[in-house]
Image (cartoon, rainbow, N blue to C red; front, side):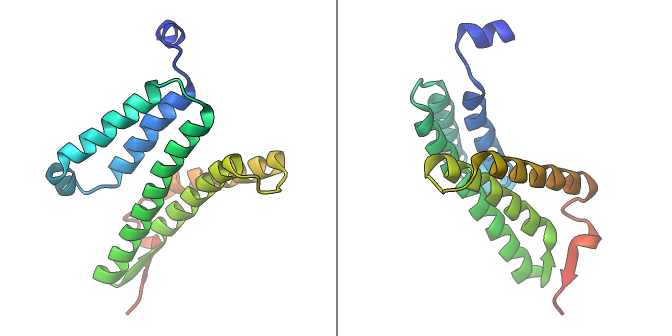
Length: 151
């Protein structure tokens, strides 16, 4: 496997594009995916193609940031739908959206100069992401401890 990665000059950024797309797909409803299958296959092929192009790192980051913006919008949509249909607040979605927001902030810190100490910022966000990882290993989406009833 390592030999194939070296021969084809595949980097971690190449995988990250595909993984970001898979993360976006994982948030979709199965029936919706079946209905819009060709659109998602097309987007997936574009993601794979973009990961194979040898363009500058900034173009990769813009492409990955686009997926992460779509991911956070989908998470917020799911949160709003749960609130509207079940009249409950599921904190799982809020933590997931906040985590995704920190990932987006890391990309924005790379793309735009934000006048923050990059090393300290990286350590703080990485620590937060570790805590979120522990949170997600402890709680699931359907955990009753994370649901607050509005009525």
